[in-house]
Amino acid sequence: AQSVTQLDSQVPVFEEAPVELRCNYSSSVSVYLFWYVQYPNQGLQLLLKYLSGSTLVKGINGFEAEFNKSQTSFHLRKPSVHISDTAEYFCALTTYDKVIFGPGTSLSVIP
Amino acid sequence: DSGVTQTPKHLITATGQRVTLRCSPRSGDLSVYWYQQSLDQGLQFLIQYYNGEERAKGNILERFSAQQFPDLHSELNLSSLELGDSALYFCASSVAGGFNEQFFGPGTRLTVL
Image (tube, rainbow over all chains, first blue to last red):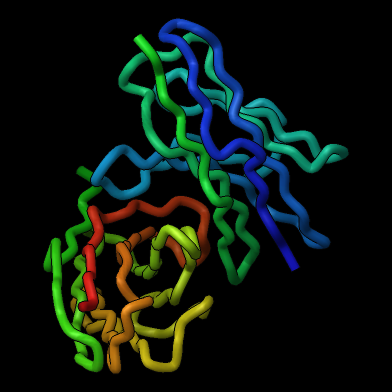
């Protein structure tokens, strides 16, 4: 069975500060990993994905994530956050026949 | 705007009733996925259709069913509704049959009273 853990349910951070949102996964088979963002009253939007190749993945809006197979992690980072980054962030893994989302991390950017 | 449309945006109904949620995928996308998002269960994958055929099944209740029509739009039918079915229901679409890149619609908020 597969699972996704997001260790922080809420992350407050000051504007222009760096942020890291943590994601750990568990799987006995190969998986693909994703980060999605959900702005208030909207659907999810893909931020970035890791399918294979370079373990450092760059996404939209200045976000990046690093795949670490030994630590089974896929943490999301941004060097300088903006007010507009306030949203819910979901880590997800997929196999050939399923997708599993983590519980989400609520990022609040403080002016 | 992802290009995925869902109707209605809001739906309020009573326990025991049946509702139908509709989803139109992005132009050219063959796969449609349905998700349920609630506070206690989080975001749960329900079911996927690819080019009219069921492709993958998640945590979909027997009271729920879906189909994808020849024009590729999809409907999610929820019957014998219970209070616990109150949630946001999202549809997503993608061009291929896997789960690699999905485009989500704005969702339908279902309230069961």
